[in-house]
Length: 386
Image (tube, rainbow, N blue to C red):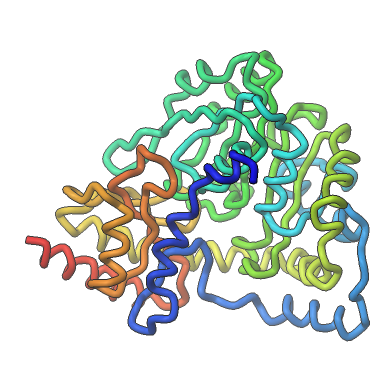
C-alpha cells in the first residue's frame, strides 16, 4: 500500500455519522445534502431512459446533447461557453479528482484555502503532492480571507491553487475583486486554479444572475482554470453522482482519457435525468435557494440567541458553521451530541485544524420544525454542561 494512502485520515464526518446512523431518535444534520427527494420529473426522465434500454456505454466526455445543454446553462450565467469545453463526470467529487489527476504530480506544491471539505485537501495528497494551506480567519462568527497572505503563498513553485467558494463549511464567498486579484496573480506565477463552484447557485446575496461570483465571469478560455460543478446541490440530486468540468480547450482530450481510465463514462440514464433538470432549471433551483434561505434564517437567529454560540449567517451554501465557547474537541463534542442529545452535526476539525471547536450544521431540510427542535436539543445539552 502506498504511504500516501496509509497516511490519509478517515472522514471525521463519517465517524460521527456512523455513531448515529440507524437511530430513529437522532436528528441528523451531518451530511451536506437536503432531505428532499429529487423532483419527480427528473426521476421520470431516468426511468424513461431505462425503459428505452439505454443501459450501454456513452461517450467519455458525456452525451453531446448534455454538453450542449450545460454550455447553454453556463452561458446564461457567465457569458458565451462552448460545449467543447465541458466534460461530464460521475459526480462532483469525481470531477475534482480528475482535475487533480490531470494537473498534479508527486512532489508538486498545492495551495488550498481552508477550512474546506476534506476531500479537496486529500485529493492532491493522494497524488503525492505537498499541500500548503492558507486559513480563513473568523471575525464575529464570519470567516474572511487575508488576500495578501494567499497571494504571498502562491509562488512560481505552486502548481495548483484549490478554492471552494461559496465555501463548505463556512459559507465564505469570494468577491469579484478578490477573484480578479487571484487570477492576475496566478497568471504571473503560472499556477493552475481549481475552483470548486458547486454551491454557486446557493447564494443568498443580491445577484442579478442568481449566482455567486465565478471565475468563469472573468477568465479567458485559455487561462489555467478548471471549474468543477455538480447536479447534487442545486437540483437535489446528491445520490445520482453526476457533475461536470469546465476546461481550457487544450485540457479536454486529456480529461477524456482520464475519464476512460477512471469510470469510462457517466451512465446514460443519469445524463437523461440531468437534461430534464437543466430544461427546468429556472423552476427548480430558485425554489431550492428560496427554501434554503428560509432554513438559514430560521436556524441562525436561534443559534445566535444561545450565549455559548458564535455564528454569522452564511452568504452561500447550505451550512451554519458555529463556534461553541469552551468546547475545544469538536469531534468529541459531536459524538457526545449524538449520544446525549440525539443531535447529529459535523465536527469542525474535519475541515481544518483552525476550525477546531466549531461545528457544521446542514440546514437543508424540508421541515423548519426539525431545525427548531435541533436548537432546543443543543440548548438543553449546553445547559446540562453547567
